[in-house]
Length: 158
Image (tube, rainbow, N blue to C red; front, side, top):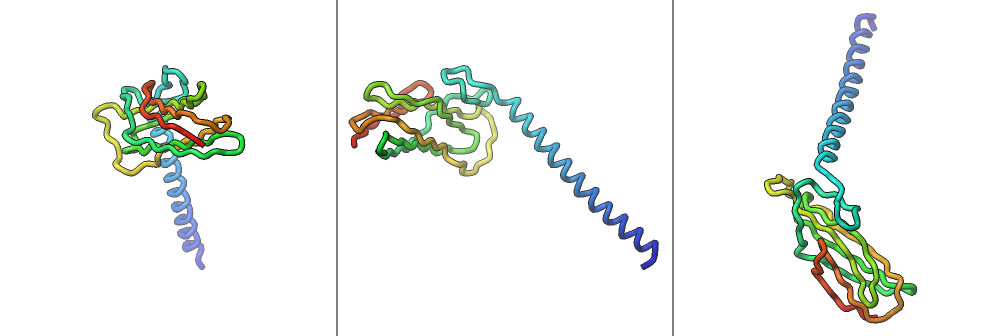
């Protein structure tokens, strides 16, 4: 092979490598910018629990369907909560859970995007929480509270 041909091949290989590196740099920069925009729209909740983050301007929202199931274990009760979300812009967070006498309280916060927000229309993953209450077998009332309001009560018996 001639020296000129080797130079052309080397130059092409360098161009391919440079193109790949440039594409990777653009992808990283794009992801960084998108992440900063998302962080700028999120702010910590000022409510009790303080662990949730919602977009500025979001409004409280009550999920139309909350599915719960439970199972007695040798040392307590496992409660599973599932909330189906209409789109990825709606959010549900577990604020806390506790026992108060014969009541088992599960506190959630639910937020819808601000009015006028465009949101991709895909089926998002549902919100799921598996909770453990260290209680003996007995009759309890499971109370699900969303944004400070009781939305569901069910009786749990062994």
